[in-house]
Image 1 (tube, helix red, strand yellow):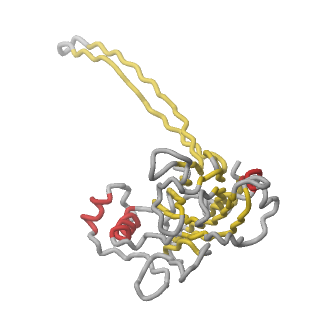
Image 2: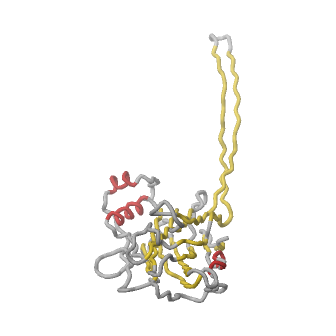
Length: 306
């Protein structure tokens, strides 16, 4: 399947069929599920998502820290959530993550549908905006263009030939990029209730996406009922992986259980330096979030979310 370079999954499915080895289960229960699940009454589940096999490509997302406090001293309740994502390619099989989209939607309560007026507000995130990481890959493209006129006369009378040629050189550059943004989903009004992060490999260097993303989001609840985070991770590896992903989605095995944050508001994880729980709106999220990219020669680059 290494020769496939197509995004038309239906064509690939038609050729290879559905005889595809799917990723191993998360090892929970006996239902061969691919998803990590909440335990009975569990809140702030530490291990959020896990897919892949150690000998091949794999990714997972874990809750790193949760700080419950107020937006400003004496102000509205607010919650700071830090999630750590890790993406590991396969050296043996030569497979890599080309693009990753992480989406987290916030909904009120345990059963309220996403898109309601009580959805928590996504107040701030990091990384935020578009970031470029590492040195740029450079590609030189030269194009030769020629034109001419040739007139053939009768034999022995010679001919007329006229023509010219020029070349055009173009320099293309590309870098690993990380984009973060806030969105409104599920409704057409109100505050932003969704965060999206997109990781894109250097299209020229083709060394994969950053293998580590620590993302921060500051949420303002709109009720006292607690809230939940609905996490979805969409990855682009190759055509074979896309087929397996399509099968998992069709069978409902790629759904990630929502992470619940109860009204009890209990902190989780290590104490974060420089974070004032009574003034979360003043927190420098960029100092908490970071991305790490390791290229094929083993160089690591860190970039804060500013």
